Every structure is written in structure tokens, then in C-alpha cells.
Image 1 (tube, rainbow, N blue to C red):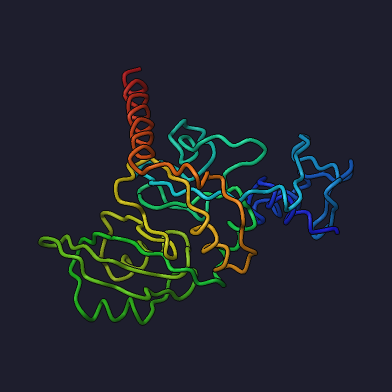
Image 2 (cartoon, rainbow, N blue to C red):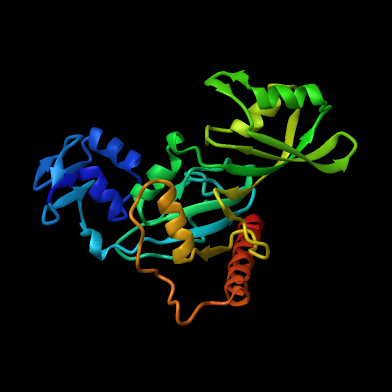
Length: 284
């Protein structure tokens, strides 16, 4: 049974559907020796090349969906490669064979916290689609005078340059003087939306941390630049939210679950190595 090219490639771990559609439109993908077209359908025995390199096409039964929780620090870029050599969120992820990690959304360079990665491009595409209204929660430190009237405006909605926007929920979190912490929640992922909402009211965001995506929370104890594999139950929660069939297999061996202590110990070693490399680059 044939399926759309971008859907098959996304499922096989070659990028999100949006990324693949862009490559198809640019003529960078070929099928059986001919330049592919948007909407083209293929079978699993088709010969597909991306930028001249043949890629593996996997039938659904051969694909195991993996999802990682990553604790992004400030200063890392959400890009695969940076021409200036700055660190990226992909630098510390585990290597995968026959697939690649696709980020579920982005966090700007000055934002830290929870970032999800998956090998299933179709899952990533659906999780990012605004139509699914998935909750994102942030801890935000705001510098400026914040009164009840401002909170009401941010909840009711304000006009940004790319359309109206609002927070679905705002909770006060404490602080001192003009620096106050808030927990805010919204259901879309527009570029710098949290910062722009506060800036529309004359306030400045001095710290921003994403702490939750849907019901997936940033786990306490996971160090910055550390990652952890999501369980089959968590993966199927994400898949159910976006109307995808549940998985019946997991990359994690349920008979030998890895303890948090062991996983976080590995993540801390990775973080220490990253900091050491950064110091060496500074000395040069």
C-alpha cells in the first residue's frame, strides 16, 4: 500500500514532515531516479535519495518510536550545526542508527528547560501543530511593575505582530522587588511568544524555563544538557494526544529498567565533559 513520500520519510526518521516537504519543494529528494514532487506516493521498495544519498525506508512494523526528554541550558542553539561553532542541543544526544532526532518545537538561545526529541517525524509534526492545542508551561522571572490589570490583559489577549495571543493561565510564584516569578501556560509555540507577551505590557523577561509539555514534566535531578528516555506509557500518551496508533514496543528494556540515579550520573558526566571542552575553547 502506497503512502505519501513525506509521511514515509518522517516515520523512517529522516526529519519532521514540515522539513521534508521543504526539501521536496526544493528538489532535494528523488524517487527511483526522478525528482520527487509534493504529494507523491511511494511503496516501501522505492529507492529514495536525499541530497544524493540513498536513505532507508522502513515499514511501520520495523519502526520503534523513541522520545527523549532533554534539559536544555541557556546558550545552546536549537539547530543541527552553527557556522560560528556554538554549542547546539544536538551535540549531547545519543547517536541513533538509521534514523535521526527531530526536535519537538524550539527554545530560543536564552531559554532553558524541557525539550522533547523523537525519531518519529510524524509524531513531531503533529505535536507541533497548533490545532492540537497542547499545553506548554513555563517558569518566568519578570522584571517590571506587574499589577492585576496587566494580568487580566494577558489572559484576555493582546495583539502581537503575528496576531492575537494570550496566556491560558498565570500564577504568581514569588520573588523580591521588581523581579517576580510566575508560572504561565499557553497552548501554542510561536516564536518567542512568552517573551513578546510580557514585552507588550512593558515588562522584561529575565529568566525563562519550560517545565512541562502536555503532562510530561521536566524531571527533578536531570542536569542541564542531560537527557532521559521516555517510557512506553509516556510515548503512548503523546501519540494518543495527536491521534496516532499506540506503540507496543519500547527501546527501553522493561525487564531491566535503568534507575534515575544511573541515568542522571551519566548525564552529569556528559555535562562535565561539555563544560571542560568549553573551557578549553576559551583558553585557545
